[in-house]
Amino acid sequence: MSAVAQFDFGSLEPISPWVEMGAYEALWLEQGATFKSISEKFDTSPYSIPSDFVPTRDALKYADLADERIRSFGPTPYGVRIHGAGEYPKKIRVAKHPVELLYYQGFWALSERPSIAVVGTRNPSSDGISRARRIVEALIAHKIIPVSGLAKGIDTAVHQTAINLKSPTIAVAGTPISSAYPKENADLQHQIAREHLLISQVPVVAYRTMPLSKTRTFFPERNVTMSALTDATVIVEAGETSGTLIQAKAALEQGRPLFILESCFLRNDITWPHRFEELGAIRVSDIEDIFANVSSIYQDR
Image 1 (cartoon, rainbow, N blue to C red):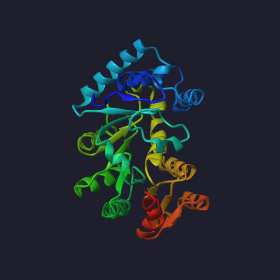
Image 2 (cartoon, rainbow, N blue to C red):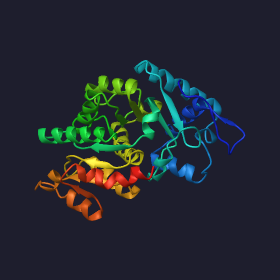
Image 3 (cartoon, helix red, strand yellow):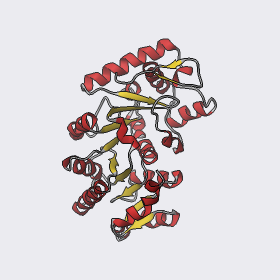
């Protein structure tokens, strides 16, 4: 495992990423565990870490099991980021139920650079794909990393465009780093994990035992974290019931700029663009509209 022990200066004890990883896994094996229930557990004890709630013996057991499953999926080194230690991204604390641990593969330093999420439907039109590519090209020209969710459709176009341009991209997955979804994106996921940055908050051990009704919930929760990790979100194309709208809602709640392409407003079969514009989303008729509204974010850094 690539992570090394970090020290929490509020405690006399060193924090072991290995133990915390196993403890995080154990928390997800508790009856009825959700991001909300786990977050509430830490809300009542804000300076705690996962191992404060789990016996060390159990933590070590599940760390071994998680490690075995991750390594059986592929040889790419991995690490974890723990709230209260090391390089955990404090910006994700704005999420409604912020996660206490993130798995990652690749170059963590990319998460500290300017980034914007570009997301949309899994079943885009050809025009939607073209628009996503143009947005990614523009972000890269402004030295902003494009981030997406590794799903088929718009997400795949975002990541592949960045890779084709030999520029970094970040994927925030809705599945554990020990599996790939959709299966046809397995090679893309492995490439991002090796050469870019792959992030997941999804538990490795518990995931295999969960019914589909439960594993599906990891995708919208992923969108909430993706919004918090990035400086803004751009929606390229999405239907009325698209999970992308979860990220739209999260972005506004978190105080992140939300951009919606003009083409979305021109569709007669959806109403969500107008609803979100009334709530503060920004209509994008030209790509420069995005940069005009985020320039102040980067000037302050």
